[in-house]
Image 1 (cartoon, rainbow, N blue to C red):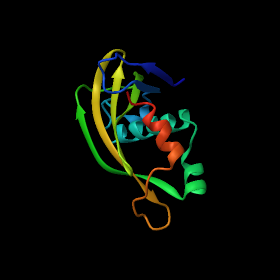
Image 2 (cartoon, rainbow, N blue to C red):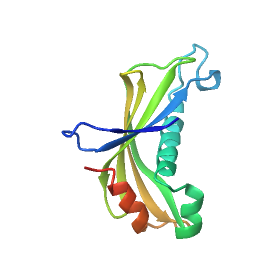
Image 3 (cartoon, one colour):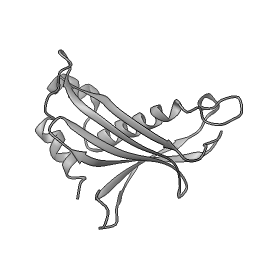
Length: 148
């Protein structure tokens, strides 16, 4: 079950969303270590569940607002390997928020140990023209509420 946690008052983000994940054989290479490309999927799943936690989903955003999310930048630091059958936690926190872009800080953790750090920037684009559009007001309001 996903959870939302309050952060220390000194942190930039007030809330961090957490998504649990178990590593299956399909996620690993022949040595039982998570294949590096899988982490992109893990980060995406966590952001999708974060969006649902806020009360939205991608299908609704496309139908109601003709809006899609596109990843415009992603950086990842691989700190330690994850292995078959590990229980992980993928966190999501809004780091910066603009009119058409926002940047997420995401960590993959095994217990308290951070094994991957990521920064992901997404933009809001029109579903038809794939041109930048402003985040819908109600979406932006809920996203901004997770900032301090």
